[in-house]
Figure 1 (tube, rainbow, N blue to C red):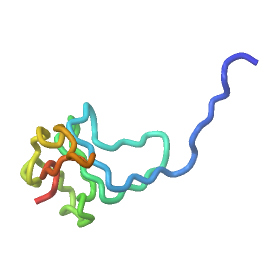
Figure 2: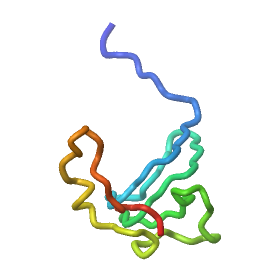
Figure 3: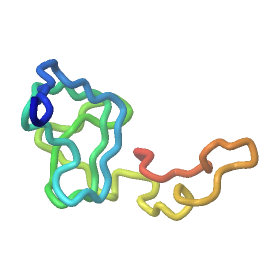
Figure 4: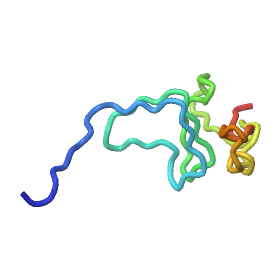
Amino acid sequence: MTGSPTREFRGAIRLTANTAWRNGDAGFTCTDAAAASQGNLAVANRRAQAVPRADGRPWPAGAVATRADFRSTDPTVAEGARQADGRLPLTDFLQTS
């Protein structure tokens, strides 16, 4: 037998409570499988995309999140050192206003 068998994932993908920020394309794109999206957040990606707000409330029809919709879009604190107990740093980064 040469090569390895190809296995395709045929189930539906569920994306829940994810963040896409400053991606080179859209925040969330599933081209080869069905996808259900809930409570995700996408902002400052190369291609604008309307997704439900992170807090679960819908944006107005056709709306796209912008930096003004967030308390902070500065990742400096989020990229910083963890707290003494190992938890991530406390930050307002990408929290909706």
